[in-house]
Length: 591
Image (tube, rainbow, N blue to C red):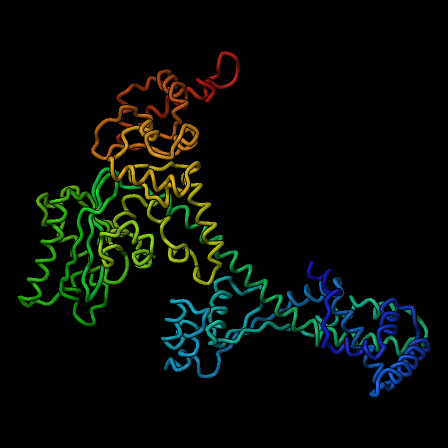
């Protein structure tokens, strides 16, 4: 479409427009159609010279008008869709990407970073790169590679360096003569005059050759180089968004940890490790604290894992370590913690050592209590957001990240939807990608996840509930508030008691919302823990009866939150594959 529209664009200050003002348009149009020879061109130029002299005090000699005709013809050639396509294809085949450092900006001293850090387009991550003297961009300080060999991540890295004014990026043909030849072959007047025998069109042929060469060197080369660079960057961004989407689904569909309280640990250095305990059912915060064990010795690194990372042997260090172990063990014992989630950020190894020692010091002596390392990408950003302030207003700001880490282990789907897409850390150069597209991919992934596995309603956050088909922000908030005030829902029927959920809304949402009992008590309706819609309960029970699955298996299904034993699954598969009396597979209730 851009190529089709190109002939209709006007550039008042262009050389071709100035030539048109002198009357060179008729001669150029005649040459474009190849309906004029040398004698006709000379007559047209003389007529234009006489006309321009009458219109302007500057006038125009025949040589100047000949040059003006070439300018007009060059612009017509550069705007021809066929010529542009030929030049574009030739350029892409031999394009060479060159990236060089801006003088003094990658010196390592960081002196060139101050100006770039103030750029409105610089994000937190890129500003950090500038502050370090651009160390992250040294691989591209003298970069030269064919266009086809430049990977998507390299395009995104170079673009970030250009935005920070640390790098210069250009695209140029490796063999410029081949691209110029492709333009000449596609130029209509040059092709027409080259095919004519005789010598009555030498002047026209020379002008056409000059116009084709000028069209490439002055007009097409810079514009197509920018276009190739722009399209390559767009393709790199598209690939990065696809990478984000591909990595997002496994993150959201990670199995939740049901039926137990979780202790979240946000590792730190000078300010200590932040702790928060969330309950088993509603994931509400029941306790939070801070422990400040002694820091690892200098030079031991932040990991601190292994025997070589031993701490100081002074009485003060031992007392601080013992106090931190005691606090964590007491939280685990007093709140019935069944799992500990440790963030994978800085000083995570030291935090893991501390948690392992605390688990051994609990009254259970470890037992079934274990810890897991959890992604903490975006936890700090979330803790300072308005959403966290609304949900965790009673929790101090410094402990909100620990709450998020604990909830990520308890229910990844419900917690990760709260995080800004660019902060999830599951793609490449996310902060340089369009936030709107990342948000759309996150919404689509959440919708697919909800449709695939449903939502455990008692522990779901409003951010997740509002993405359930049939709920919006208002009804999701009302549902969450009802659970917080009245207690956990014991059945799907109790959804009808929530303000704003009428009969039609109930029918829409019932199949997506699952009920599980956090205390292990049996549900009045075991099928409430499955994705079976209440309208199909009778058909489902008929199918289970035909497969010999009794109420005991259904009760176990509800306690686990989904999934039959292997033997039950085998009988269900056999029943589904068996031919029905009327032909086809058996299907009680048509399902």
